[in-house]
Image (tube, rainbow, N blue to C red; front, side):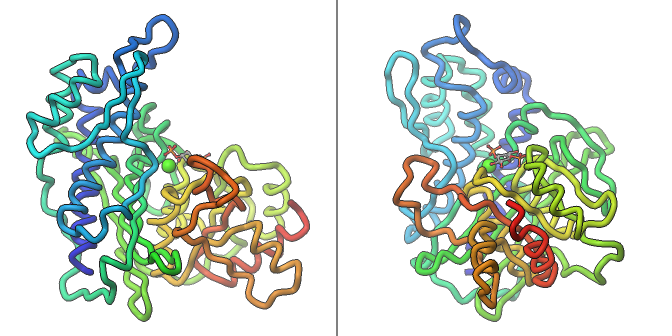
Length: 378
Ligand code: 2IP
Ligand code: CA
């Protein structure tokens, strides 16, 4: 299945190109940032352009994966639905067609006949990406496509993507918000158990080319199945002195912040945008853990980075379930998130929420300290 990994790296790069082009090309950028509401809203213009860009990215990933691995068709899930309905009640299914021209024609129908924007977007979707350098030679992954399913988040942290604040990233430091928080996430799980086994993360806006040719991206990947545990990032070195560092959502509850101060060093409670970016910070060792007490993330947010953390010896647990187990005296507080089963008692996207909140960690002893600090406090 190393072929699947190479394909996912390639399609994630293609997706990142589309994300960059939508900000670079003026006609697309204007559509991206303008929010049409009320009287201004054109009834033939389907939802917002940002949703259309997300859907196109998701569909190009689905299209390319299905073409090479037909066994995966029917098991490629994403955040977005590709069925659009415009204000006139007309329904259009947005998909990648076999030629650029056909895709442009289809896109024009949902862009109210804006041929310039439709052609630019179709060109980006059909363009081949640059070759991806990843040391996957000699890698063998003991999995069959018929055993797997895929979760796609076309652009995580969309609000940061739209706002577009440019940050210069400092080596070894977490940068709380900006374009670099926007990530393309593709996670692969086992249909039988729901374990995440492979993940690709592409950060389309990692650094700006000093020659002025625009943004350059960065990619990260990991495989974790059986005895195969390989990640593009290295395992953490020595544990840092002076307490744990934990990254949180800026909307996290006060009670969680207070409970964590007992295990965190001074200034070691940090905040960042994007669920995917916060897990990436843990993967990179910029934070020891990410704690979220709300059920506000979904399977598509966590599947890909979860696989990378597992490859590094860590994981992502369901916070509510782990607290319940540790309060009842269970020996192993690890209750890893799984990706194969929807909640029967919910509907729509809510079926796929990580309801109990989560803790992403690299080191199980650090996870235990965090659970200890949160026990009885939520
Ligand atoms: C969102 C986005 C938000 C995040 C939320 C995600 O995904 O990443 O930033 O909230 O959890 O689901 P927060 O930044 O408070 O953690 P999307 O942008 O794809 O809707
Ligand atoms: Ca998301």
